[in-house]
Length: 190
Image (cartoon, rainbow, N blue to C red):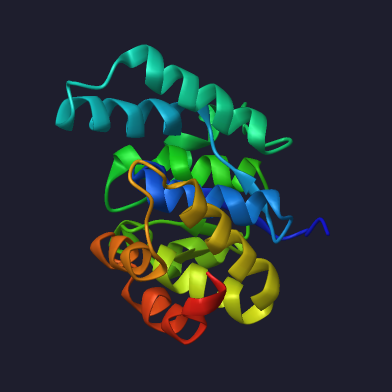
């Protein structure tokens, strides 16, 4: 199942491994077409290295490569010329909107909703959505596929292994409270 629905990931949702893993897992399942840019990669990697200088840059470069290889046609290029013509509360976020326009995305998944005002995005037919709401909507649209994706993500956490309950606590720590609460009803399946 390959969806025609296109979603651009902001750097803030790629920053955290558990959030990134679940986003990529459901993208690979074909629930939507995921997009990002090399600049978005640079941003989340830069912020992660600042917070975690113990991480080897080579390891993050490997993660970047694996992310790019995991989703077909994921990289948006040639969007930079749009940036000067876009107005957002934070000019540093114009590249996100520009890549969304160029990549024909209908949605931006971001924790920073205030940086993407509805009145600006609606001109381009784009909506910004918090990852918690995005996951909840995906679970509502494609429950069996979504539950399998969650189970796959949890099962890859093996250092140490995580129970379903522990995995839901990880989601909560990443501001994914609504989807964690929803998944409580399916705890035996994940």
